[in-house]
Length: 421
Image (spheres, rainbow, N blue to C red):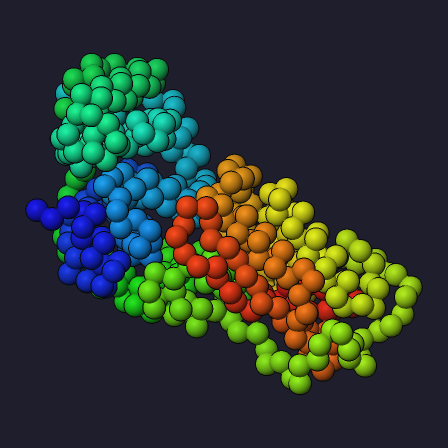
C-alpha cells in the first residue's frame, strides 16, 4: 500500500485527484469519528469532515512529507469540531459538560460507553507527541516501528512512548471515576475509537474539496468552510478574511494565485501622484487634530501620517493586540458592515494569538509587510485620500517560499488613515 505521505506529495506536486481521493477514503472514518464524539450530530460531523479534508488539500504542499498524517487529521478534526461547537452551540456545550461532570460511574458491560464521552477531553490534555502516539497506534492501527519512523524514535522508544501516553489517559479516566487497566483501555480504543462513517461520505467530500481547491486553495476553501459551518459574520467580513488568507497563502502552484483573484481588488488608481509632489487636495494645515485611526496628529503630510499609523499598527501586532488592530484600522466604510461588534473570526484570531503569540510566525510575517510600507512612496489618487502600497510579506520561519507581494490600500477619512479591507 502506498504511504500517506507519498499520496499527499503526488497531489501537492501534480494535482493527482485519485491520490487525494485515496487519502480521503483511508481517513474519513477517523476524522468523522472524532467530530461525531465532540459534536454528537451526524450532519455537523460530516461538515467538519469536509472542512478538514479541504484544509488538507490547501496545505498539501507543506504537509507532503508528513509521516504522521493521521495525527494531523485527528488534531484538525478535533479543533474544527470544538470551534464549531463553541461558535454555534455554546449553550449545548455547557449543558453537555454539566451532564458529563454530574454523572456518576455506572455499572456497564461496555467500557466504551463510559470512556467515549470523556475521550476527547482526555486527549486534549496530552502533550502533542503523546497524543500523536495514541492516534497512530490505536486510531490508525500503526505498528510501533511505523510510529518510531513518524516520531523519529527507535521501535523500542516508540513502544515506551505509547505505553506512557496510554497510562496518562488511564489516570485521567480514573480521576473522572472510570477505572480500568491500561491493557483494557488500549483494547477498547483500538476497537472503538474509529467507527464507520455514513455510507458514501468520502464520495461526497472528495468532489467538493477538489472543486474548492481548483478554484483557489486559500480563499475558496475558507469560503466553503464558512458556508458549510454557517458562520454568521456578514458578507464583508467574509471578503476581508478571504483577502487576508490570500495575502498569507504562499503559493503551492497555481491555486494560490486563484485565491488572490478571489480577493477584493483596490480601486483603480487615477493618474498616480507621487507623495514627493503632494496633490492639491491634500490639506497643508499644520494644526494637529486627534486621530482615532492613528496615534499621531494629522500633519498634512501623507507620508508622515501614514508612517505614524503604520508604526502604531506594528506596535499593536507586536503586543498581540489583533482585535484592537482590526477595530482601530478597519476603514469606516468596511466597519459599517460589522453587524454587532467585531466579527467572530476576528475575536477568535485575537484569542488564538494571545494564547500562542508566535502563531507559527504569521504575526511576524504581517509585521514584515507593514514594515515594508514605511518610507515607501505609494501611488495616490487624484484626491489625495487613497494610497496604494506594495505590501511585501516574508514567509513564516521554516516555510520555503518566496515573499508575497500584494497591493495594500489605505484611505483617509476625516483626516485619519485606515486600511481599506
